Image (spheres, helix red, strand yellow):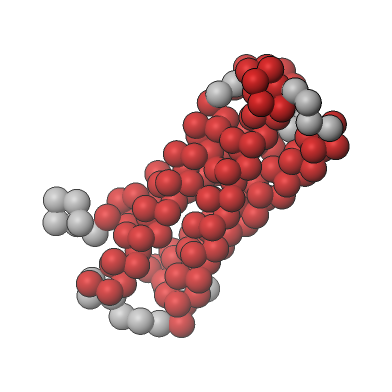
Length: 154
C-alpha cells in the first residue's frame, strides 16, 4: 500500500515502461555498435532496475490479490500467470544485459572477458535478443490480461 492505495496499479506502468525500454535497448545494442557504445553502462543498469521493479510489481500484485477486495476470476488467474512469467523474463533480461555488457564493453573486455572465445559473444548476443523478445511478449500479455480483467472484455 502507498498512502492507502494498492501498490500494484501504481507500480505497474513504471515497470512496464522500464522493462520495454530495457528490452528495446538490448535488441538495438546487439546489431548497432554505435548505440552500444553511446548507451554504455546504462544498458545493464536499466536491465537490473527494470528486473527489480517488475519483481516488486509482481509481488504487489500478489499482495493485492490476497489482501484486497478483488474477486478471483479465470482472467485474473491468467493475468497472474503472465505476471509470473514477466517477472522471470525481467530477471533473465537483467542478468543477460549485465553479461552482454561485460562481453561487449571496453571495460568488460579488458577486465573480464578478454580471453574468452569469440563464439561466447555470439551465444550471449542471441540469448540477449531472445530474452528481450520474451520480456516484450510476456509483459504485453500480462498487461493485456490485467487490463481486460479490470476494464472487462477480452
